[in-house]
Amino acid sequence: MSKPEVLEKTPMNTAEVKAALVYIREQETELNFRAQKTEEYAQDFGRISVKDAKELYDKIKALDIARLKDSTIHKLIDLMPTNEKHVKIIFGTYNLTVTQDNCKKIAEAITEYVPKK
Image (cartoon, rainbow, N blue to C red; front, side):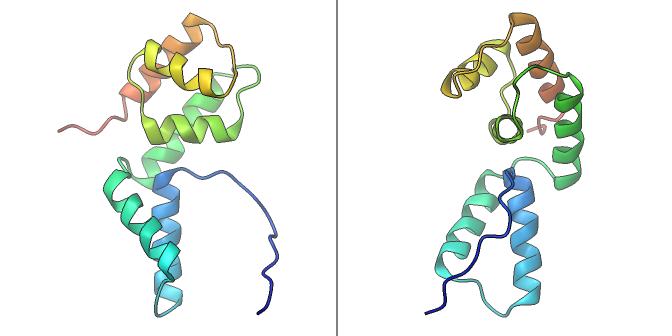
């Protein structure tokens, strides 16, 4: 078997994964087992559109919070915490200390994009 080469690693949120899998499905006739399972997960848990995810990413990035990485921003977009306590919990998993004020700003930015039920 051939060994595929990883050209680039970039973090993605669920909305972007869903869009990428749609593109791959259009290019190829069939997805492999892992891609099918990933697509099912993205369909079930992808809460916002790609456009909204990009806008939200830009808003959070514009807050200019020190040491906030792209992977953390994408995790925030996937989980969509709507209050500062939940934002702080997510940062705890990344060993990242963020002020209460910045947590509140992030939660407010995310609240604008939470889908209505």
